Structures are given as C-alpha cells and as structure tokens.
Amino acid sequence: MKKNRILYLALLFTAFIFPYFYGGRLPYLVLYIVLALPAITFLHALIIMFRFKYVQFTDKVFIVKGDIVKFSVRITNEDFFLYPYIKAIFVGEETVFEKQVQSINFSLLPNSRKTYTFDLECKYRGEYEIGLKYFEIMDLLGIFRLRYNVKEMKRVVVYPKITNLDYFDLRTNYIAESRNILDTFQEDMTSISNIRTYAYGDTLKKIHWKLTAKKGELMVKEFQNTSEAGVVIILDLFRYGFDLETNTIMEDKVIECCVCLANYCLQRWIPTSLVFYDNRIVEISAANPLDFQNIYQLLSVIRFDQQVSVADLLDVWLRRNFTETNLVIITSNLSYELFDKIYKANTFGYAVSLIYVSPEELTQASSVEIGQMLEYLPEINVQTYKINVGDRIESILEKRF
Image (tube, helix red, strand yellow):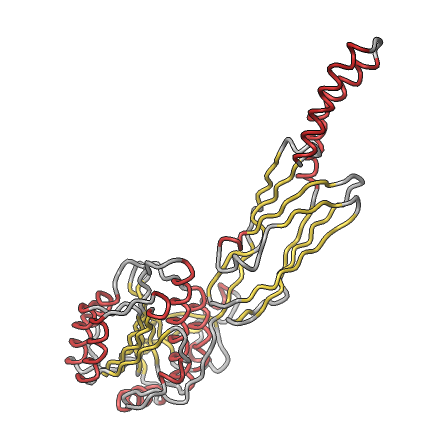
C-alpha cells in the first residue's frame, strides 16, 4: 500500500509539471484525471463495503471441553470488479483463542470467493465470542481506510467435561432420609416451588393445565419437598484477581468439580441442591438424572463475577436452613473467615466437605495459612480435598476417609 501511495504522488507531480512543457488540452486533462483518482478510489472502496458478503460457521453445534472445532469464514465477491485490499480482524484474538486465530489480508477477483478455516482447541468451558469483529477496506491508492463493524458476534458455548466418579464420601443417613421421602412422594401439594416444561417420566397429575393451554406446551408443577436435599453444593463465584488465562483455568477446574459431583449424586437419585450467589442467593434443586441437564447447561455459562465471598454466602445460608444435610463447599478462596463458618456448620450437625481448588501451580505461590487450615479441618471431621489444576479430579474425590 505504501508503494501505491508513492506511485500516486509521483504521478501527481508529473501531472502538475506536464502542462508547462507541452501545450494543448491533453496535459490538463491528464492533470484533472490524476486529481480525481482519490475520489474515484474512495467511491470504489465505499461500494465494496456495502457489496461484499460473508458468512461464518463452525463444524460442531455441541462443543465439549477438549474438542477441536473447525471455524470457517467465507467472503464472496459477486461483482464484476476487483476487491483489492481487505483485512479481516477476529474477536478471538482477544480471548483464550488469541494464538489460534489471526487477522488475514486478502483480495478478491470478480465473481470469486475465499474460505479461511481455523482449528480452535476448546481448552476451557464457558461462553465465548469468536469470529469476525470488523473488516478494514482500503482503496487502490492506499489513502483511505474504511471500517465495517460486524453487527452480531458469533457465540459458542463450550460445555464442561463430565468426569464420572465411582465413589464420593457422603453421610448415608441424610441420603436415606431424603430418598425415602422422594420414593414415597411426600410432597406438600399446596406449595408450588417451580413450574417447568414437561420431561419424560413426569406424572400427568402434576401438569398445570391452565398454563399448558396458554403456552401451547405441557407445563409441569413442582411441589416443595417436605425435607431438605441429601446434598447441598455451595459454589463460590467470587471474582478472581489473576490474569485472563489464569482466571479461566481456575474457573474451569472449579466448575468441573461441581459438574462431577452433581452428576455423581443425580445419577444415584440423591436429591441435590446447588447454591451460589448471583446478585442474590440462588438455590437450584434437582432430584433425578433428568434434572442434571439443567444444572449442566447453567454451569457451562455461569460467570465468576461476584463480590460476595463464599464465607458470607455460607453464613446467610446457614441462618436460613436448619435441617442437617451433606454440605459440600467448592472454592478457590480459603480464608480464616470461611474456616470459621465451616466450623460453625460442623457444630450445627452438617456433614461438611471442602473441595479446595488450589492456584499454586499457576501462581507459583503457596500460603502457610492455607496449608495449616487444610491440615486442621480433617481433625474437626471436615472432609477436605485439595485439587491442583493439573490433577485428575476422580483420583482426589474418590478418596475414602
């Protein structure tokens, strides 16, 4: 492009001095043409910006952590003239895909198209924007640069890996009590806790007929159970203070632990509640394998962007709940405040387990205080699991106490 600008300046200089050496109208006609060239090339670039077409797509719809996805962009020139200088910039350059997607420069001949394909390794779960961010279109002379912003970014959801456990240490008397209530259907039929779409296996007695008629699809009433869940999972969504990659790795490991445990419980029909803070305390109840998909989809896109600590979350939850149950806390933020709340829950009769995901391998920093707390918690009958980002989850969580 720089050569084009230099060539144009040389041509412009020649056109200016040409009339002094040669008479007649032709030299002035050449001068006027040269002076008009920038306007002509700008108009050409403007037409390209409104005329070119593109499409972007992936070869997979359902993407799980670890998959390699082919992401393709196809740009088409349906006109009879050349598209000389186009640059495509991708949003993935600013995310975890930064080393896998690079901007491209290209030109298109009349009635032609080009397709560019990138292999994206989906290392971490989450919802990401990928694909085209904007185009830069330059004129033939390299003087003007027009920007075309892509209106809708392409989003992909990378689902967490599901790790199957053969065993997780839970207090069985809590589970047996909840299972007995589940099996005998002892529900408070006067208290509706939720309304959802029909799923295979639901009894027709629970169908909400008025709402079904209104929505045009089967809607089912869920009633408040007369007992608490067999397992309550407290998930810490506190915002990390590391760099983008470290945050992503830590969040991915925490979610993988949560998915693993929820899957273990629900596959065994152990009633499970997932509790987290998202501008308010959210509690999601599940009772059977069919309910796992809802939790799985939620955990795929949930964000770690809260300012409320897991210690405060646990403290409020303990004030609201009085029935003893298995309580599993999943966090990467172990503090003396959380230690005190765990001790409090333990004295209240809860069977407390702590799954601590450690950032040591990523930050190269260890804490003496955290080490001391992890050593002391088992002494007060708190089952403690320390998981590093490089560990296989099942090898840690299947530990027997």
